[in-house]
Picture (spheres, rainbow, N blue to C red):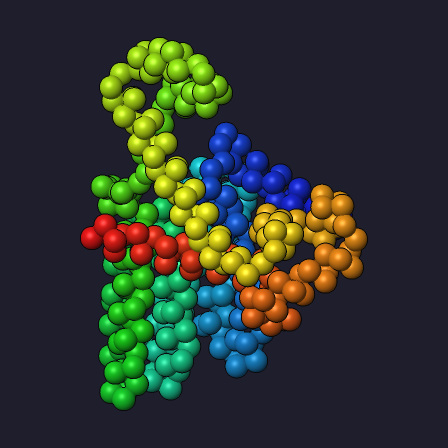
Length: 337
């Protein structure tokens, strides 16, 4: 647990260092990606050196050395905050992308179609880099990757046998579609346009609703007085929300009665507490009953609801409640229709 807290503290310190002024959700995703990609490079670079040394491939060895020096310089620039972190993470993506692209060209030049697996693996990782960059709203970087992928893919496919080509094209198309999907996913005007969301009460409407709820039955004059202070639009909004809440409560009550139709009142109470996430000891204390009694009643509940002993009681109750709620709502809508 202590090690976990230390790791979290270290991550937060790094986050504050890289993003000293502000750190939102997207910024945190970038920090996580920066750390993971750096760790991957630290593992991959020695592996590549060893591989090129064993194969006596000095061109690849020199290329890997150049990439290592460029990565070390970039790490220095980013960690010393010589550039804005958004620029730094973009440059890291670009550096890795360029390395993969050059490595693919070298494989095709020296190995031809004998090393298609390495080339296709590199292209696959390049697509992942593009999708990851887009998920972090690095739009220009992603656009550059998408454009750069076209010639790389074209050259790779031109060195691929027809039988393999037919399968490779499908993967390439999916890669480009995933980039498009993440781009649309992050495009707020499209995602938020004309959403059918429930109406939100304004702050003054919430206060009025709470005041109405606190009034007693005999205080009808105060109710009329309070509502008269609100505009007709505000009154209608409160009434709509109140009606919506009543409808929801009524549907939930009917659904709950369907689920627990064969249960006793005590068993219904236990089910309610299970749904609230309460543990065995908490249920025992609230109902003032022994653990053996509650355990016995839980067994009866399982039998009456035809549940297996291995079934998670909370999850199964939730599932049945929402199914019953859906059926009740559908039945009401059909009657109206």
